[in-house]
Length: 92
Image (cartoon, rainbow, N blue to C red; front, top):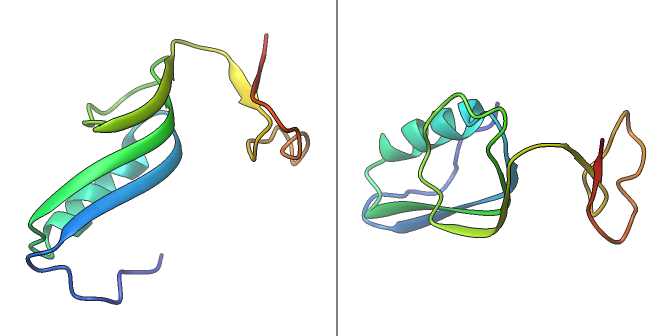
């Protein structure tokens, strides 16, 4: 809901994401950024989750890729719980 407040024309932009899931939101963000004429837009994510991917988005830098499972911990939550866990776990 909030747009970028600094000029991006001619600049290199890196989008940092915790997890890329469906790709829907990221695709919209990239489209919005490209309208501002940056030199480049790159995507960095800790987790590239392929199970529910609906949009093909290029991930330039990733921590790791997973096929499926619901992840919790390290800031990721389930029903506002478990985000405080120091590691990432998959609920099965």
